[in-house]
Length: 440
Image (cartoon, rainbow, N blue to C red; front, side, top):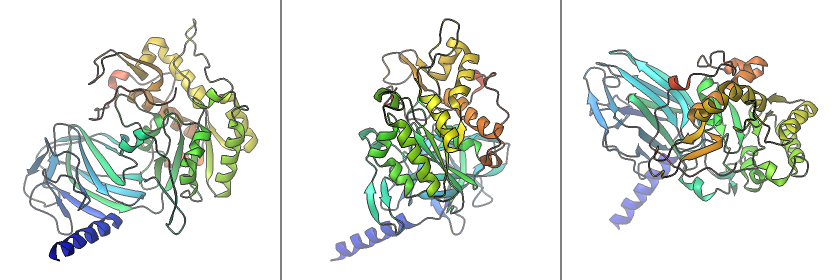
């Protein structure tokens, strides 16, 4: 009887925790600030309590004394991941980073390598408070009463992703990450930018692959705007409907939210934009978004790395970019012409330098990678970062309403003068895979 009661208590506590939306974690040693949950180097994730580190090997708890919250921290010489079971929604996360008796250098990403804070350095004795805003999602489609009415049909590879797993996962990375505390609070007011698209937009989990969608959060002001990336490799407009990905968005999107739509790479396999039903579906999505009070924004697909004999980019996307431009005019919606911007960007790089923006690596550059990688469609983190800057540049240059939410992380960007790849900062995550993403 006692065992049954104990099991019921554990189940009840786990259920209550899973519904909890506000958390205060004190990272470090045994001293804990009142009202905070203690997190030490041995706090391995436990489903029963709903939080902890994915892997505790290499973690160190350091206590310098003094302030209970800021006088101690967790650090490691390799990337480490902290997960919390939490209902889907938008959340503000407040982080105290630094070392009360030393320096620190921290990069923060969430879920599938979604860039939030990049190379945050603190001086000796300095503790910096930083805020990020994160969208957490699951695969259940719910009505307004929260009742399950459907499910997103995930691909087998998606079951391993960190963004469909009913957890918020924070990646701490860089040369000397030092985390003093983490506070998680719901955000009910942020404008949500929903991203739809394919492998060139998706939050890619594995190095060395990356897409512009996972770099975009870095360039927006937290608390005001949150990026919700629903893109997936290999998807077309039709597949996005068939797998109920767009239904998930229709049941979540609010008046004043945004819907970014970028498809084309995979759609062209079904024929031109008319034959494939692309134009018809795209117009239906635009009308649906407008009916829900959301703001649709069309994004033309970026070019592949295909040059002619004069080092000019060759259009390999048939009539799709022009179709999107025409529909944007007809439906009177904003357009981000990433196709045109990427042409400028890649031609400025030239055929050889452009390889450094795509997944081009010799054999054995990564673990379990016996063959060379030479992909002229998919990007590495540097290429993805440059394309995200192109997206932001278009928002700023056109003076779109989202311009007022662009953060100071964005400096004026000229695709005719790409950033120096040698100066690009990207400490790699622990997740690596040589398998090419779906789609081309």
